[in-house]
Length: 110
Length: 233
Image (cartoon, rainbow over all chains, first blue to last red; front, side, top):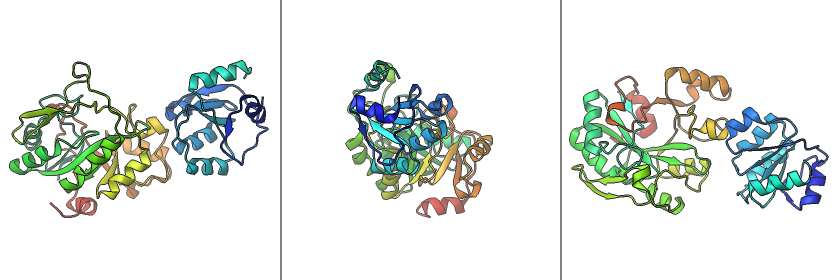
């Protein structure tokens, strides 16, 4: 499944305008402690987090995540969206808690 | 001068009740320190008594607070002027969740007078995150005239590197707190954009007990002090 399919099938909100929606999603990682995510995430994963510090863009880039999924309506700032667009990392707001977001991805077979 | 700019009074639930303003100042004096700061979690309410005790006992003081941001990062705000530090309280009250302290689990949160009498307990739990970002916290401390030191930057709990992976490149802090001289090299090795001379480095005790207050091991020059906090003392 790619990012475009994900958005179509979930109705989740794409926050970034500039990103490659054909990027394939290969698995999921959940975590908010960025040192931990940096050490354990794997390339291609969709990363679910409520961490909305600017550093998430760098972490996603470093780990080569396919996209960042912001759960639970955590307060995403325009600065983060700008930075993510600059790095061509897609950020999607799920609007539901981390667990529910993960469950949805499982249902979709990610 | 020998300093210790990070210690908790009996207002912090995790600190011992022996950490009263006079006890802290006297122990620091006995240990041979010249400059100290009290930095309780998310509160400045112990600082008036600490200021009086420090003046009576005759030790130089900075007035501080250890803020926990929404990212659960610990940040020290340090002020040369008590009134500036006290202005943090209003901002903290706006942003701190109202969770009652459970003294039997978390510990007491005593506010003292200048005679070390325990007057009242802070009813709200102080071991919480404010709903403000690290950047907003840095900005607020600066706005009030204080200096920002990122606390215990390599710790596994509540440090900027643990919570956020690394020290953000464009964060406007004034100093970094490390635990040992060796940690400086680790910070430099993992952050190519930080130069040794581009920031100020501090080694503090983070004492929660009197015995843990620093020995006279870490020095700051009058010049550095003046650059950071003026010559207002």
